[in-house]
Length: 342
Image (tube, rainbow, N blue to C red; front, side):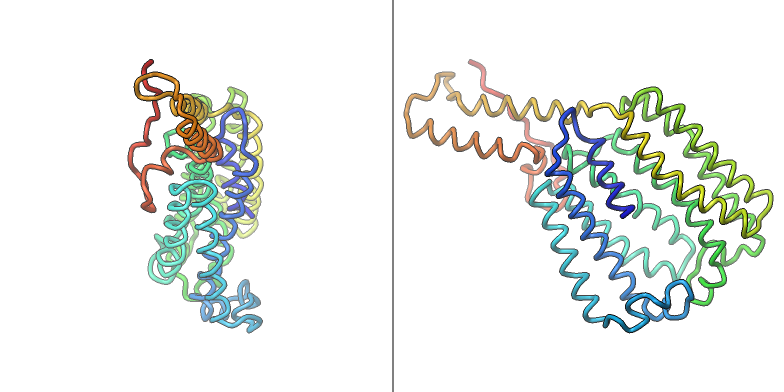
């Protein structure tokens, strides 16, 4: 649900004055299916490890309620369906981001958990992609403005997961996972990583305002919220106890929904999405004019042009980049539709 919420927030932030609620629903549904696939594959690959840990031994696979072939079939089916839905109803860029994130989570992050502590940082990248996916689904591009919420997700996950890794460090050792806290008996380095990443969250409120994503009120609210979480992490640095680690974990759980709510409350319409819609409107007008600048007189040609306009209008929610290429990653320049000079 957290992944779906961040994806939906990214879609709203990437929208203009008018939010395409049908597109929002499709984006959330596609994200939910891809996330379900990634989590299912994670549990398929870690069924033996999960069976050894108290916090995971009652999951469907280690407890025997679901078989591994059943889970693998479900994961494959729902992953393909979610990616296809995003490609069909939004654009290929959003679908490509979803497919990449699925692969990164299931086939890079999951095995890394048993190999090297860097898995936590890779997992933070995975968690930062859904809001980027939502933004891309709304406006068909990834710009500097699109990086604010993903950056918040990335830096937020480090203190969140460091607290969890400290609280469950013995369980992780039993399960065979090489977390950062594995070689940090005192917990000092774990606490310092948490504190440092809380500090990285501080300027995001001002950057959101400076980039024109939110009003100035968000700067104040974001700063106060981040300072509260930073205080919890500093308490953990000074006194590395289970109580303080749990307090920091709870502070991180409260931080993200409040941060996203304030971000959406004070958001400003995305100008790039608005200009894209304007270009498409101009394209519709251009389709009604011949190359010589004369209005098409032939009835059959006019009907053909009207059909093209109707098709373009129906796909207005899909940004121009979706037409640039049929490749999964259409990082080609978006076609510019300009009405011919009269």
